Length: 163
Length: 163
Image (cartoon, rainbow over the protein chains, first blue to last red):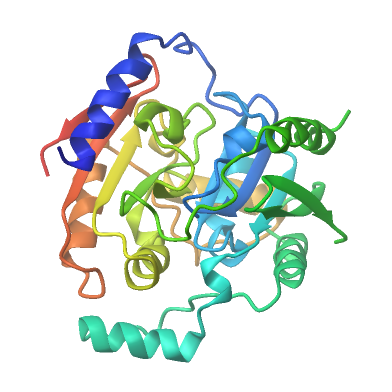
């Protein structure tokens, strides 16, 4: 059975008990969550989100530089008025070094990816601060409360970062 | 009580019952899910994902053009070997027109965002096909199975798109 078929079976079950068909498009709790795509993170579970509550944007590392398009859409078209940035321990982006990684991609695929910034992370709290700052300083992002956290994959716990 | 405090309270509960502290970093089911940040979508629930299973990348619309950095990292650093693209009915990106939206942002924030492609969607199945094709044709993306779905926010159901 392929992963696709497994997804289809699991989805049948979800749809069979589905009772959220009338939720509005704008997030009910008016919040944009920016976090990592890491497989160990389930933001809905670890933040107590229900369907309809929040925009949940996720990329490798939970980096803000790549999230601007979505933040602007979230605020201007769908009314969110708070941003929460969450990076996490043992993130793959802590292992990547920009030049070495580009070399590896070149070796493995033949493709020159020097035009892509892979946005590696050196220090977790620092990366949270950098990304909160980037959002605060961008003039196309509304002046809304922005907070930062680190999620610990060993404990399931978030802790707030001074930003 | 702010959303942040609510998140912290909900997180305490999650952490209290947490038993997934030993999961490895690479996704167990070797799959990269690309979908929308929409508040009504809970991909872990509607695909039956547990912590540790899959990379879940989400942006406005679930657009591939913005996901390349993360796809490359997912494949090259963390071993995923399948991609599933999921767009959804009633997506905010169906309402946005590039020029009008840029004008609105300019009016609301004073900022010229003409350098940002907001990647609006005209037709859902077409946008899924476009994004699957974009990933298939990118030489830095490995030649892995890529499938596409549309999620229906009224029913919780996914249906496969011919790609």
